[in-house]
Image 1 (cartoon, helix red, strand yellow):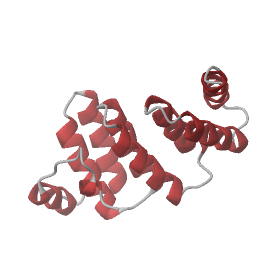
Image 2 (image 1 turned 45 degrees about the horizontal axis):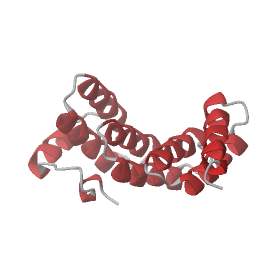
Image 3 (image 1 turned 90 degrees about the vertical axis):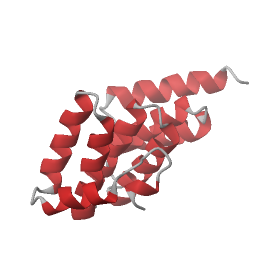
Image 4 (image 1 turned 90 degrees about the horizontal axis):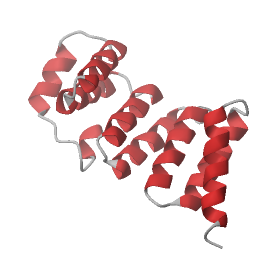
Length: 144
């Protein structure tokens, strides 16, 4: 998958290519994207992440794209990015936790619980994964 295939991401291909040609590493671009995002410049942040993903298809970059999209309210696209991160790093509990939280917001509680369970199994000491799992369980028990 490519970042520009997502509905919420509108990129200028020429600008992405210019960033790729700049010589910056993927991790440098990710850091720049995080700075741009913190300043509210989401289009620029996504351009930098798209360029970073052309250089290196690592899980951390997909995860960051998911965070940025989630922050903008593009939950379905964020979910796709978390899925890409998990494909590349299936033992990364935080990716499952963010995936689960996104699913809760989308109303997909059963799928969210499954992802929280995986996150807890991968990192039993993560209080966020445990509390997310317990919260989601309580939401599901209220539906019975």
